[in-house]
Length: 121
Image (cartoon, rainbow, N blue to C red; front, side, top):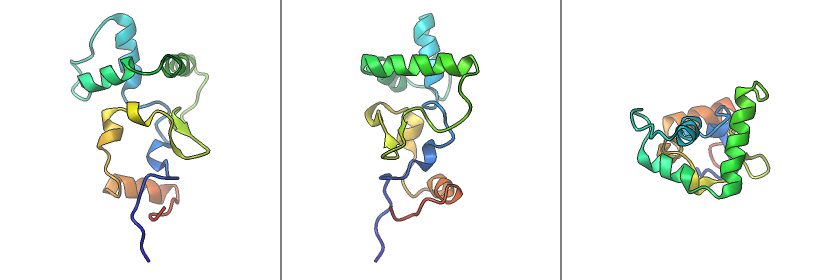
């Protein structure tokens, strides 16, 4: 019996990101008082999502970025990936690129294959 592919217990797409994609630029823009809308991959929705983060999540991103920029963090999974559940801790605040990735799409299935995560979770 085949089961539908879901994100539950997967996290494959988050294993090479270190940081929610694009959000390091959004944080820098917020701190500098710029919009960042001149970047073709960034949109107002991502900026608003970062601004609407709970304070502890916003601080967590800032702290992680500071550590990363100082060389304290190596490339690894996204800092929002919960290693116990293999799901995003701040799913409702994830960037557009994460929201746009379709379950069972070609990139999704490549990541699953690369990390040997079953297609039927």
